[in-house]
Amino acid sequence: MISSPNSSRLKTRSAGLCLTVFFILLQAATAHASQRIVSLNICFDQLLEDTVPDAAEHVLRTDQHAGNLERILRWQPDLVLANPFSNPFLLDALRRHSVTVTTLPEPDSWSQLVEFYQRYSEATGYGQHIDVTMEWAQPLFVPEAERKRVLLLQANHYSFAGDTLWDQLLTRLGAVNAAPGSGLVTLLPEQIVRLDPDYLVVVQGEGFALASRNLLHGALTPLLTERQLTLPAELFGCMAQQLPAVVEALRTQVEPL
Image (cartoon, rainbow, N blue to C red; front, side):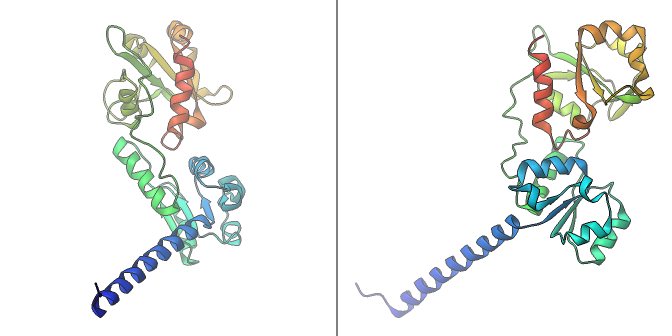
């Protein structure tokens, strides 16, 4: 069978189109792979190190530039990752020097967490493998007669109640958030005792601080002795970016109990 000239031209155009698409995708992948990325947030530091190959060569961490405009510009970045709390004057100055700045959301719910990783992947070209469905995490707080009640305690009496990322994480781990209300709440030692949680998760920084003086309250001693789990403040503060590490830190304490 002899093909027509039109058919041959169509095949040639199709092949050319496929090659064009291939080279566009290849160029995009190469561009991402060679990006020089600046982090303006300590939580992004670890995330970039975990997801960017040869991060030492392609990532400038917060402790390496300390928010100094000249140091950042001297490094000639292709991308700067910021969050809503980054210095707006620094961001404006970077944009005036034609530096691409991407501001990622600060997740406070599971839907925002999904959005965060989508935007992170779009901006950097990395992180597509991160699974935020939590299908990788087996229920941690296995119920006996009913689901375990877990209460978070931070410095200055703060805790996260309903409609928060912490609350939704506990649900996925098979537990119930014992903190009443929604959002960020404060809990006095007497309230904590009345709530009588199965586990008290204490967020602790290095050394003792006056902000954590509520831990010295005598009424909390039985809870802290028998039911306490701890999370380092630097890990909990980056929970959205270090979710597997947070779950693992809890798991290593719950399973031996």
